[in-house]
Image (cartoon, rainbow, N blue to C red; front, side, top):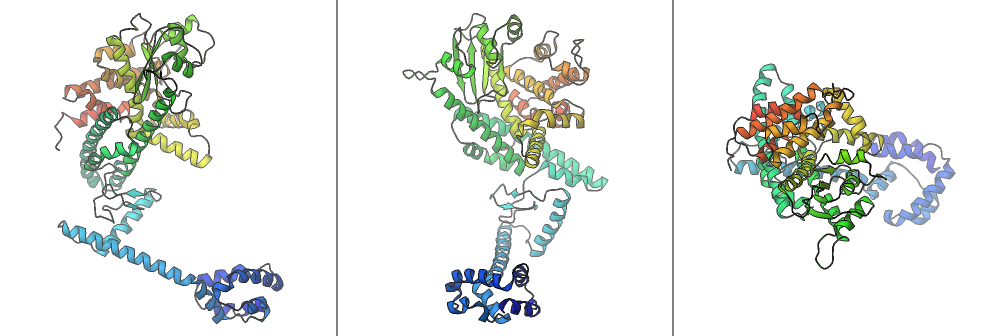
Length: 534
């Protein structure tokens, strides 16, 4: 009878205009016959009878219960479902009003024009439309002043009224939607902001590396807080801040791995590193000659006295025999950084010095230059993760592939993503990043323009990237002309900044975050160095 009564009262119940009621009825109508339904609901109601304050004898005798609109409403009130929904709705209204009052108070204190509810609504509606067009719907924007998170990028923070930060990518998309006249005008403003922010990023890089050198054991959060004032001053966007944090986390991860891997190779009496023991741990064989280890914040620098030992480590310990051909190749280099090393955390933290020239006991000027050169490669790796917009595009593509296909993102990095960008821009991204890294490291090391040109482009150079770059011919030993122009322009751009009054560190910070092919344009926009206002 109870089940039939529910069906007979359905039309009247629907007049309550409650989606909750309709969904509840629809959930019990099909499949079950009245007896099955009665058994299941009797068991359910036994468990909740005390909360509902309904007589248990009535529940057990289900067919005698009169279920009508009034009793159904009574059940809803006991569960308080509708009341909870109303209270949630009221709470939302209250939070909106509080946010409005808070912003209004802050703006009035600062002498700004009053922020009306209409203005907030207009701002919200306008930006929601734009964000959908820009496919920004899933982004969360964080106020760089109070840390408040909001789903859409307003021109001001809905918590503290702070003007939101400068996001170059988002700003450029907005500019492209305007008229030709508006685009030209806004583009000039955009370029000025962009140049100022690039200079700020260079200062941030310099401050971070100095901080790491002074206190290598601090957390990534502590490092970020040390540059907070610069981040705020130069209005770095949420994505830019997130990239810096990821770079710092990568450094901290590598630094911890270095400490953990050298710990069992320390001599207890002196605390110094047992070089041969660490060499064996890393390359799976005992060295023939002497080994010296220099530990830097983000790098294990290994000086190798014996050429056979150097050949083994140069090849990641993955060779069975040291041949004359392998010796010839390895001995062309003064040192190298091992990329994608096999131990977790040390993937880009191992550097070697070829100290087989009889000067192992006294580090020559060349040896110190090699150390500085290889350490710059390690720092460049951090910069690449933190500030390089092109690398961020690759990272976003990797995240997209991983999210959609559930595989290891590293499987796509070279084979899929770099190829995708090469086809799109007609450039070999991987080679450009490698040669940019070398130009940067040689300038920081102190080499002149002529020396760097000779090192990278002479016929006997160890850097063979020009054969593989688009237009190169390995069989004819012919470098790609595009590659030669790319290298020359990159070196010229770096040197031009030095002539305009920038230090090597300043030039490094301003250029390394950009694709090598754009260095010339960056220099043209920057002009002569002006001292930053504090």
